[in-house]
Length: 188
Image 1: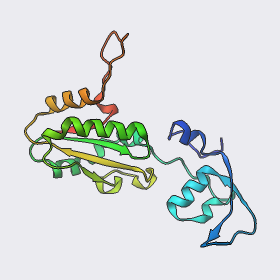
Image 2: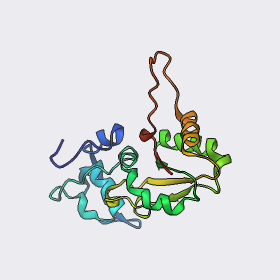
Image 3: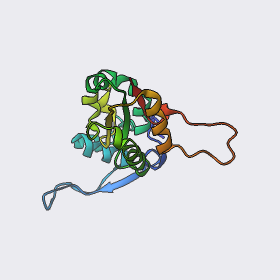
């Protein structure tokens, strides 16, 4: 692993970040690179995301792995201002989601289904920047933040509904292991 790259992303995405790739650069249907460009998947991803082809070059700084949905979930306290703006005098559940991640998509879908009867309207889906997250420019472009504005409930009932939507206890567990903070945050 090259210096300057963290192991943030996790899983296949992170493990492939420094994998070598060879690309041909085209503009329209015409090849514009003299030969194949030898770079990494992380550089290619970052160049496409940021719109900066200079990132492909080996003499530029190694781009960091973008913050993942898990990283954003750990920092959801930063969106308290937006959650309070959206509150209807009832608790607001906030979760990060990544539509490119099947586990994240499924979790969002389960929470939405479980909370449907308590929602004033569809969840407000905001970019990390509009949600109020700091260092939003380092967050993967596939990650956004969902605000579930509830009506007619309290924080305890909301917690229990979220838990019932996503928690599957282990058969051998001696104690309950559900932590809401691993999935989102309730602002009340």
